[in-house]
Length: 321
Image 1 (tube, rainbow, N blue to C red):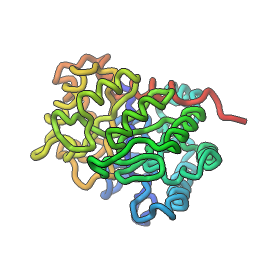
Image 2 (cartoon, rainbow, N blue to C red):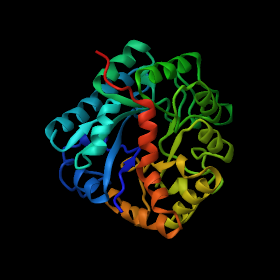
Image 3 (cartoon, one colour):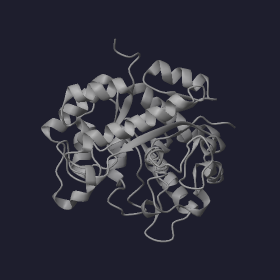
Image 4 (tube, one colour):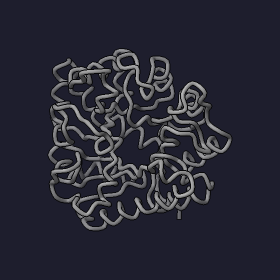
């Protein structure tokens, strides 16, 4: 059975800035490029503009624009192969024409948007459609998980930004938020929330993973979590594909398959599972889900349909004129 496959997080845009990397050819570096996306059956890929800590806070905006320019430049090279999704109509066209790779432009770290609605509007015009409010640190919007037990929630500005993003048809991603901020986000958002790359804390007690209460709260908000392939989020030691599949089974048993998606974190991770060395290996995951007893309908939901529903609930019908 052919699935419409969506991956809600990768950091490949940084490779676009390297002279030895060509997205349109198969590379020996990195974990994602166009040929390997096609081999893995990916139809829709979120591409994150990750703002490295050394650019924060004062150079976050120009760095985001630099990365955005690299992404847009790559998209312009082969418009017959790729579509940048901006609206619900674009999404519907992409699903009807799965031969084209669909792209969601995402921002990982909300520092470039701290200037307020006008800045957010500019990024929206340029095609941004998903925003992670923080990375691991504190910014003017919220605290990341790296702030530890002292971490606060969303600031007044952060709540205002969330409402602005929702009103413009942009997904809000809480993947790196501290726990208090996670709950503030669920309470503030008017549309389903994405947790783009995280796993179950019950199986691996990493601070970036979600505990039982968080998973159930996300389900109640009709959000989706993209389970990630990063070994450190899968097991405290000896991570394997089977242990990753344990996370899918745990979340499904706890909250149902409608909350599950994929969030590989490819090209943002320094180690991989041997069975999932790069995006071309995704059929191995599908086979594993089938082996664990998931039905074809459930696998289709996990591989992409749940993310499509979340996007449809967030994106606007058409661009503002």
